[in-house]
Image (cartoon, protein in one colour):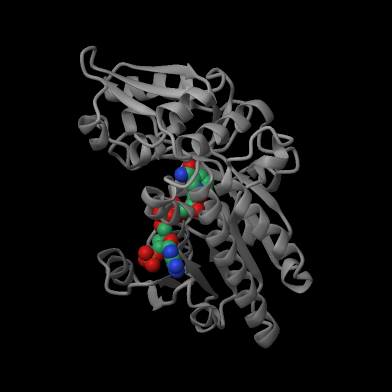
Length: 357
Ligand SMILES: NC(=O)c1ccc[n+]([C@@H]2O[C@H](COP(=O)([O-])OP(=O)(O)OC[C@H]3O[C@@H](n4cnc5c(N)ncnc54)[C@H](OP(=O)(O)O)[C@@H]3O)[C@@H](O)[C@H]2O)c1
Protein backbone atom coordinates (compact mmCIF):
# COMPACT_ATOMS: atom_id res chain seq x y z
CA UNK A 1 0.00 0.00 0.00
CA UNK A 2 1.23 3.48 -0.85
CA UNK A 3 2.68 5.49 1.99
CA UNK A 4 1.41 8.93 2.99
CA UNK A 5 3.34 12.19 3.13
CA UNK A 6 1.83 15.24 4.83
CA UNK A 7 3.14 18.51 3.40
CA UNK A 8 2.88 21.76 5.32
CA UNK A 9 3.20 24.76 3.01
CA UNK A 10 1.81 22.81 0.05
CA UNK A 11 0.67 25.96 -1.78
CA UNK A 12 4.19 27.42 -1.62
CA UNK A 13 7.46 26.94 -3.47
CA UNK A 14 8.97 24.23 -1.33
CA UNK A 15 5.85 22.36 -0.28
CA UNK A 16 4.41 22.45 -3.79
CA UNK A 17 7.52 20.82 -5.17
CA UNK A 18 7.57 18.18 -2.44
CA UNK A 19 3.90 17.37 -2.97
CA UNK A 20 4.07 16.98 -6.74
CA UNK A 21 7.34 15.05 -6.58
CA UNK A 22 6.02 12.49 -4.11
CA UNK A 23 2.76 12.28 -6.05
CA UNK A 24 4.78 11.36 -9.13
CA UNK A 25 6.44 8.60 -7.09
CA UNK A 26 3.05 7.09 -6.28
CA UNK A 27 2.69 8.32 -2.69
CA UNK A 28 -0.56 9.44 -1.11
CA UNK A 29 0.00 13.16 -0.68
CA UNK A 30 -1.83 15.19 1.92
CA UNK A 31 -1.39 18.92 1.37
CA UNK A 32 -1.90 21.26 4.32
CA UNK A 33 -3.14 24.81 3.82
CA UNK A 34 -5.06 27.46 5.74
CA UNK A 35 -7.42 27.93 2.83
CA UNK A 36 -8.63 24.83 0.98
CA UNK A 37 -10.54 26.92 -1.54
CA UNK A 38 -7.63 29.04 -2.77
CA UNK A 39 -6.87 28.65 -6.46
CA UNK A 40 -3.53 26.99 -5.65
CA UNK A 41 -5.14 24.49 -3.27
CA UNK A 42 -7.86 23.67 -5.80
CA UNK A 43 -5.28 23.13 -8.54
CA UNK A 44 -3.33 20.76 -6.30
CA UNK A 45 -6.51 18.88 -5.43
CA UNK A 46 -7.20 18.45 -9.13
CA UNK A 47 -3.83 16.75 -9.50
CA UNK A 48 -4.81 14.19 -6.86
CA UNK A 49 -3.42 15.78 -3.71
CA UNK A 50 -5.69 15.45 -0.72
CA UNK A 51 -6.10 18.94 0.71
CA UNK A 52 -6.65 19.42 4.45
CA UNK A 53 -6.88 22.58 6.51
CA UNK A 54 -4.63 23.55 9.41
CA UNK A 55 -3.04 26.70 10.76
CA UNK A 56 0.29 26.98 12.55
CA UNK A 57 -1.27 29.64 14.72
CA UNK A 58 -3.79 27.09 15.99
CA UNK A 59 -1.42 24.24 16.88
CA UNK A 60 -4.20 21.78 17.73
CA UNK A 61 -5.17 21.75 14.02
CA UNK A 62 -1.79 20.22 13.18
CA UNK A 63 -2.45 16.91 14.94
CA UNK A 64 -5.22 15.65 12.61
CA UNK A 65 -3.33 17.05 9.63
CA UNK A 66 -0.23 15.02 10.55
CA UNK A 67 -2.01 11.91 11.86
CA UNK A 68 -1.19 8.66 10.05
CA UNK A 69 1.53 10.18 7.86
CA UNK A 70 4.69 8.14 7.24
CA UNK A 71 6.56 11.31 6.30
CA UNK A 72 5.95 14.91 7.34
CA UNK A 73 7.56 17.79 5.46
CA UNK A 74 7.28 21.22 7.05
CA UNK A 75 8.27 24.81 6.43
CA UNK A 76 7.69 28.07 8.26
CA UNK A 77 7.19 31.29 6.34
CA UNK A 78 9.44 34.00 7.81
CA UNK A 79 8.90 36.58 5.09
CA UNK A 80 5.11 36.83 5.22
CA UNK A 81 5.36 37.77 8.89
CA UNK A 82 8.31 40.09 8.32
CA UNK A 83 6.81 41.95 5.37
CA UNK A 84 3.35 42.37 6.89
CA UNK A 85 4.71 43.83 10.14
CA UNK A 86 7.56 45.81 8.54
CA UNK A 87 5.71 49.07 7.77
CA UNK A 88 4.85 49.55 11.46
CA UNK A 89 7.77 47.90 13.26
CA UNK A 90 10.51 49.55 11.21
CA UNK A 91 9.45 52.80 12.87
CA UNK A 92 10.55 51.37 16.22
CA UNK A 93 14.06 50.24 15.31
CA UNK A 94 16.16 48.50 12.68
CA UNK A 95 15.85 45.25 14.63
CA UNK A 96 12.19 45.28 15.67
CA UNK A 97 10.74 43.55 12.58
CA UNK A 98 13.44 40.88 12.45
CA UNK A 99 13.10 40.14 16.16
CA UNK A 100 9.33 39.87 15.87
CA UNK A 101 9.41 37.68 12.75
CA UNK A 102 12.02 35.45 14.38
CA UNK A 103 9.92 35.00 17.51
CA UNK A 104 6.87 34.13 15.43
CA UNK A 105 8.85 31.70 13.28
CA UNK A 106 10.30 29.99 16.35
CA UNK A 107 6.87 29.72 17.97
CA UNK A 108 5.42 28.16 14.81
CA UNK A 109 8.40 25.88 14.26
CA UNK A 110 8.21 24.59 17.81
CA UNK A 111 4.47 23.98 17.34
CA UNK A 112 5.29 21.81 14.32
CA UNK A 113 7.89 19.84 16.30
CA UNK A 114 5.51 19.40 19.23
CA UNK A 115 2.66 18.18 17.01
CA UNK A 116 4.97 15.83 15.11
CA UNK A 117 6.38 14.40 18.34
CA UNK A 118 2.82 13.95 19.59
CA UNK A 119 1.64 11.91 16.58
CA UNK A 120 4.84 9.85 16.67
CA UNK A 121 4.30 9.02 20.32
CA UNK A 122 0.58 8.28 19.89
CA UNK A 123 0.78 6.32 16.63
CA UNK A 124 4.37 5.21 15.99
CA UNK A 125 3.70 5.41 12.24
CA UNK A 126 5.99 8.32 11.37
CA UNK A 127 9.19 7.25 9.60
CA UNK A 128 10.72 10.59 8.68
CA UNK A 129 10.19 14.24 9.60
CA UNK A 130 11.88 16.69 7.22
CA UNK A 131 12.12 20.22 8.55
CA UNK A 132 13.11 23.02 6.19
CA UNK A 133 15.65 25.05 8.10
CA UNK A 134 18.72 27.25 7.78
CA UNK A 135 22.03 27.45 9.66
CA UNK A 136 22.57 29.91 12.51
CA UNK A 137 24.35 32.75 10.70
CA UNK A 138 25.15 34.69 13.89
CA UNK A 139 27.21 31.68 14.99
CA UNK A 140 28.49 31.01 11.48
CA UNK A 141 29.80 34.59 11.22
CA UNK A 142 31.25 34.36 14.76
CA UNK A 143 28.99 37.19 15.85
CA UNK A 144 29.98 39.59 13.07
CA UNK A 145 26.51 39.52 11.47
CA UNK A 146 23.49 39.43 13.78
CA UNK A 147 20.66 40.55 11.50
CA UNK A 148 20.10 37.17 9.80
CA UNK A 149 16.85 36.56 11.64
CA UNK A 150 15.39 34.27 8.99
CA UNK A 151 18.38 31.98 9.39
CA UNK A 152 18.75 32.10 13.17
CA UNK A 153 15.08 31.45 14.00
CA UNK A 154 14.98 28.30 11.90
CA UNK A 155 18.24 27.16 13.49
CA UNK A 156 16.70 27.63 16.93
CA UNK A 157 13.83 25.36 15.91
CA UNK A 158 16.34 22.76 14.66
CA UNK A 159 17.99 22.74 18.08
CA UNK A 160 14.58 22.36 19.72
CA UNK A 161 13.88 19.42 17.43
CA UNK A 162 17.19 17.78 18.32
CA UNK A 163 16.14 17.98 21.97
CA UNK A 164 13.13 15.75 21.22
CA UNK A 165 15.20 12.57 21.22
CA UNK A 166 12.61 10.10 19.92
CA UNK A 167 11.54 12.43 17.11
CA UNK A 168 15.09 13.44 16.19
CA UNK A 169 15.90 9.75 15.62
CA UNK A 170 13.43 9.94 12.69
CA UNK A 171 14.18 13.44 11.46
CA UNK A 172 16.43 15.24 9.01
CA UNK A 173 17.10 18.90 8.25
CA UNK A 174 16.85 20.50 4.82
CA UNK A 175 18.80 23.75 4.49
CA UNK A 176 17.57 25.52 1.37
CA UNK A 177 20.31 27.56 -0.33
CA UNK A 178 19.57 30.91 -2.03
CA UNK A 179 16.64 30.40 -4.43
CA UNK A 180 17.52 30.93 -8.10
CA UNK A 181 14.10 32.61 -8.32
CA UNK A 182 14.96 35.37 -5.81
CA UNK A 183 15.74 37.91 -8.51
CA UNK A 184 12.31 37.54 -10.08
CA UNK A 185 10.40 36.98 -6.85
CA UNK A 186 11.94 39.61 -4.58
CA UNK A 187 14.59 41.49 -6.57
CA UNK A 188 13.50 44.93 -5.42
CA UNK A 189 13.85 43.86 -1.78
CA UNK A 190 17.30 42.45 -2.45
CA UNK A 191 18.77 45.66 -3.83
CA UNK A 192 17.98 45.24 -7.51
CA UNK A 193 17.27 48.43 -9.44
CA UNK A 194 16.83 49.22 -13.12
CA UNK A 195 18.93 51.90 -14.76
CA UNK A 196 16.38 53.09 -17.33
CA UNK A 197 18.76 55.43 -19.11
CA UNK A 198 21.24 52.67 -19.90
CA UNK A 199 18.67 49.88 -20.03
CA UNK A 200 20.63 47.95 -17.43
CA UNK A 201 19.67 45.87 -14.43
CA UNK A 202 21.82 46.66 -11.39
CA UNK A 203 22.13 44.27 -8.46
CA UNK A 204 23.53 46.30 -5.57
CA UNK A 205 25.14 43.52 -3.54
CA UNK A 206 27.13 43.75 -0.36
CA UNK A 207 30.23 41.64 -0.21
CA UNK A 208 32.67 40.32 -2.74
CA UNK A 209 30.65 39.40 -5.79
CA UNK A 210 33.16 36.96 -7.25
CA UNK A 211 32.78 34.65 -4.25
CA UNK A 212 30.84 31.41 -4.73
CA UNK A 213 27.43 31.05 -3.08
CA UNK A 214 25.13 28.01 -3.01
CA UNK A 215 21.99 28.26 -5.21
CA UNK A 216 18.97 26.03 -5.20
CA UNK A 217 16.24 25.63 -7.81
CA UNK A 218 13.14 25.68 -5.56
CA UNK A 219 11.27 23.36 -7.92
CA UNK A 220 13.79 20.68 -6.91
CA UNK A 221 12.81 20.77 -3.21
CA UNK A 222 10.92 17.50 -3.67
CA UNK A 223 14.05 15.79 -4.96
CA UNK A 224 16.03 16.94 -1.92
CA UNK A 225 13.24 15.90 0.45
CA UNK A 226 13.07 12.47 -1.17
CA UNK A 227 16.84 12.18 -0.77
CA UNK A 228 16.38 12.70 2.96
CA UNK A 229 13.52 10.22 3.13
CA UNK A 230 15.62 7.45 1.57
CA UNK A 231 18.78 8.29 3.57
CA UNK A 232 19.50 7.53 7.22
CA UNK A 233 18.01 10.07 9.66
CA UNK A 234 19.68 13.02 11.41
CA UNK A 235 21.09 14.48 8.19
CA UNK A 236 21.77 18.22 7.92
CA UNK A 237 21.57 18.65 4.15
CA UNK A 238 22.44 21.73 2.12
CA UNK A 239 19.94 21.76 -0.76
CA UNK A 240 22.16 23.13 -3.51
CA UNK A 241 22.03 22.75 -7.27
CA UNK A 242 25.03 24.90 -8.01
CA UNK A 243 27.81 26.98 -6.48
CA UNK A 244 28.19 30.27 -8.35
CA UNK A 245 29.13 33.89 -7.81
CA UNK A 246 26.64 36.72 -8.24
CA UNK A 247 28.74 37.92 -11.15
CA UNK A 248 28.39 34.56 -12.87
CA UNK A 249 24.69 34.39 -12.02
CA UNK A 250 24.02 37.77 -13.61
CA UNK A 251 26.18 37.03 -16.65
CA UNK A 252 23.91 34.10 -17.37
CA UNK A 253 20.83 36.15 -16.58
CA UNK A 254 21.87 38.76 -19.13
CA UNK A 255 22.68 36.11 -21.69
CA UNK A 256 19.24 34.59 -21.21
CA UNK A 257 17.19 37.77 -21.07
CA UNK A 258 19.21 39.98 -23.40
CA UNK A 259 19.11 42.69 -20.73
CA UNK A 260 22.55 44.04 -19.72
CA UNK A 261 23.28 43.77 -16.02
CA UNK A 262 25.89 44.68 -13.49
CA UNK A 263 26.61 43.49 -9.97
CA UNK A 264 27.68 46.55 -8.00
CA UNK A 265 29.56 45.89 -4.76
CA UNK A 266 28.27 47.94 -1.83
CA UNK A 267 28.86 47.65 1.89
CA UNK A 268 26.33 46.41 4.44
CA UNK A 269 26.27 49.95 5.78
CA UNK A 270 25.43 51.40 2.38
CA UNK A 271 22.63 48.87 1.88
CA UNK A 272 21.24 49.72 5.30
CA UNK A 273 21.40 53.47 4.70
CA UNK A 274 19.78 53.17 1.27
CA UNK A 275 16.82 51.33 2.79
CA UNK A 276 16.70 51.76 6.58
CA UNK A 277 14.41 49.67 8.76
CA UNK A 278 16.20 46.34 8.83
CA UNK A 279 14.99 44.68 5.62
CA UNK A 280 17.98 45.61 3.46
CA UNK A 281 20.29 44.81 6.34
CA UNK A 282 18.79 41.34 6.79
CA UNK A 283 19.48 40.56 3.13
CA UNK A 284 22.89 42.24 3.18
CA UNK A 285 24.15 40.42 6.26
CA UNK A 286 22.85 37.07 5.03
CA UNK A 287 24.74 37.52 1.80
CA UNK A 288 27.86 38.75 3.59
CA UNK A 289 27.87 35.78 5.95
CA UNK A 290 27.54 33.45 2.98
CA UNK A 291 30.39 35.23 1.17
CA UNK A 292 32.79 35.51 4.09
CA UNK A 293 32.02 32.47 6.23
CA UNK A 294 30.13 30.01 4.03
CA UNK A 295 27.14 28.01 5.24
CA UNK A 296 28.98 25.62 7.54
CA UNK A 297 31.22 22.62 7.09
CA UNK A 298 28.81 20.53 9.13
CA UNK A 299 26.34 20.49 6.23
CA UNK A 300 26.06 17.39 4.05
CA UNK A 301 26.03 17.91 0.28
CA UNK A 302 23.51 16.13 -1.99
CA UNK A 303 26.23 14.10 -3.68
CA UNK A 304 27.38 12.85 -0.25
CA UNK A 305 24.00 11.16 0.16
CA UNK A 306 23.66 10.03 -3.44
CA UNK A 307 26.35 10.73 -6.05
CA UNK A 308 23.77 9.95 -8.75
CA UNK A 309 21.01 12.26 -7.52
CA UNK A 310 19.36 13.87 -10.51
CA UNK A 311 18.65 17.58 -10.28
CA UNK A 312 17.06 19.99 -12.71
CA UNK A 313 19.23 21.62 -15.31
CA UNK A 314 17.93 24.33 -17.51
CA UNK A 315 20.09 25.87 -20.17
CA UNK A 316 19.49 29.01 -22.16
CA UNK A 317 18.12 27.00 -25.06
CA UNK A 318 15.82 25.05 -22.75
CA UNK A 319 14.13 28.04 -21.15
CA UNK A 320 10.39 27.76 -21.53
CA UNK A 321 10.72 24.09 -22.37
CA UNK A 322 10.77 21.10 -20.11
CA UNK A 323 14.17 20.99 -18.39
CA UNK A 324 16.28 17.94 -18.97
CA UNK A 325 17.86 16.06 -16.16
CA UNK A 326 21.44 14.98 -15.81
CA UNK A 327 23.49 13.48 -12.99
CA UNK A 328 24.61 16.04 -10.44
CA UNK A 329 28.35 16.65 -10.63
CA UNK A 330 29.72 19.11 -8.10
CA UNK A 331 33.14 19.08 -9.73
CA UNK A 332 31.86 20.06 -13.13
CA UNK A 333 28.79 22.17 -12.51
CA UNK A 334 26.96 23.86 -15.30
CA UNK A 335 25.92 27.44 -14.68
CA UNK A 336 22.91 26.72 -16.81
CA UNK A 337 21.25 25.12 -13.80
CA UNK A 338 20.96 28.57 -12.25
CA UNK A 339 17.73 29.13 -14.09
CA UNK A 340 14.64 27.32 -13.03
CA UNK A 341 12.08 26.17 -15.49
CA UNK A 342 9.84 29.13 -14.65
CA UNK A 343 12.38 31.76 -15.75
CA UNK A 344 11.29 33.77 -18.74
CA UNK A 345 13.73 35.18 -21.30
CA UNK A 346 11.89 38.48 -21.44
CA UNK A 347 11.60 38.80 -17.70
CA UNK A 348 11.93 42.14 -15.97
CA UNK A 349 10.56 42.34 -12.42
CA UNK A 350 7.42 44.45 -12.38
CA UNK A 351 8.54 46.26 -9.22
CA UNK A 352 11.58 47.54 -11.07
CA UNK A 353 9.51 49.24 -13.70
CA UNK A 354 7.88 51.21 -10.91
CA UNK A 355 11.11 51.84 -9.00
CA UNK A 356 13.42 52.78 -11.83
CA UNK A 357 16.63 54.29 -10.56
N1 LIG B 1 14.13 32.87 -0.86
C1 LIG B 1 15.20 32.15 -0.49
O1 LIG B 1 16.29 32.27 -1.08
C2 LIG B 1 15.08 31.18 0.64
C3 LIG B 1 16.15 30.32 0.88
C4 LIG B 1 16.09 29.43 1.95
C5 LIG B 1 14.96 29.41 2.76
N2 LIG B 1 13.92 30.26 2.50
C6 LIG B 1 12.76 30.22 3.40
O2 LIG B 1 11.66 29.65 2.74
C7 LIG B 1 10.50 29.93 3.54
C8 LIG B 1 9.32 30.08 2.63
O3 LIG B 1 9.12 28.89 1.90
P1 LIG B 1 8.39 28.93 0.50
O4 LIG B 1 9.22 29.74 -0.45
O5 LIG B 1 8.03 27.54 0.14
O6 LIG B 1 7.08 29.76 0.90
P2 LIG B 1 5.94 30.42 0.02
O7 LIG B 1 6.03 29.97 -1.40
O8 LIG B 1 5.95 31.87 0.32
O9 LIG B 1 4.62 29.78 0.67
C9 LIG B 1 4.36 29.91 2.04
C10 LIG B 1 3.58 28.68 2.48
O10 LIG B 1 3.45 28.72 3.91
C11 LIG B 1 2.10 28.41 4.25
N3 LIG B 1 1.78 29.08 5.51
C12 LIG B 1 2.08 30.35 5.85
N4 LIG B 1 1.63 30.62 7.08
C13 LIG B 1 1.00 29.49 7.52
C14 LIG B 1 0.31 29.16 8.72
N5 LIG B 1 0.15 30.05 9.72
N6 LIG B 1 -0.19 27.92 8.83
C15 LIG B 1 -0.05 27.01 7.83
N7 LIG B 1 0.60 27.28 6.67
C16 LIG B 1 1.11 28.51 6.53
C17 LIG B 1 1.28 28.93 3.08
O11 LIG B 1 0.09 28.20 3.02
P3 LIG B 1 -1.38 28.82 2.81
O12 LIG B 1 -1.24 30.29 2.51
O13 LIG B 1 -1.95 28.04 1.66
O14 LIG B 1 -2.06 28.57 4.10
C18 LIG B 1 2.19 28.62 1.89
O15 LIG B 1 1.97 27.32 1.43
C19 LIG B 1 10.81 31.21 4.31
O16 LIG B 1 10.77 30.96 5.69
C20 LIG B 1 12.24 31.57 3.87
O17 LIG B 1 13.01 32.11 4.92
C21 LIG B 1 13.95 31.12 1.44
